[in-house]
Image 1: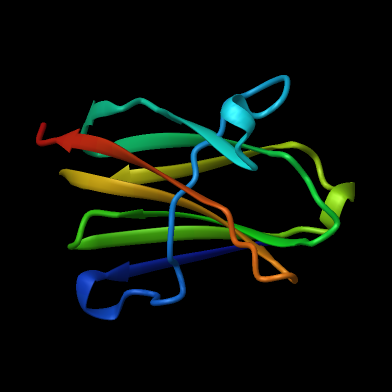
Image 2: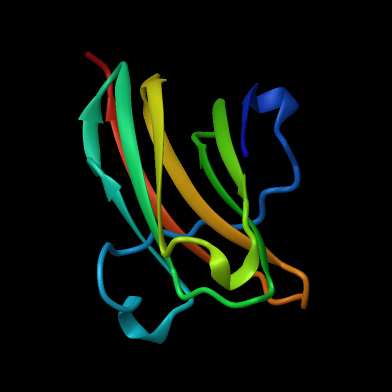
Length: 127
């Protein structure tokens, strides 16, 4: 199930805490539970940004949320996870992003209190 949220700075979804960006293929780099690739890192508005998230799965994983936030523009997408039965790689796409410097956050919610996150930054320039 995919849930998408879009809000302005005045009505942000408060539940997002962190960002995780994952590398594709193999095991997650550096022994981290979550890793990601954000492409492109610099682009021109209206922008499309792709986030590839890779997980070291555990039976405790319950959801994965990727959020992109410039302070004036916010968008997020969430997926339910069924523990270690989920695929290791998850793709997210954010389209029509206006100019700004965006924090990208990937957050894995678990049922045991361990909520791994990772952060990255994307720059969207004016046309």
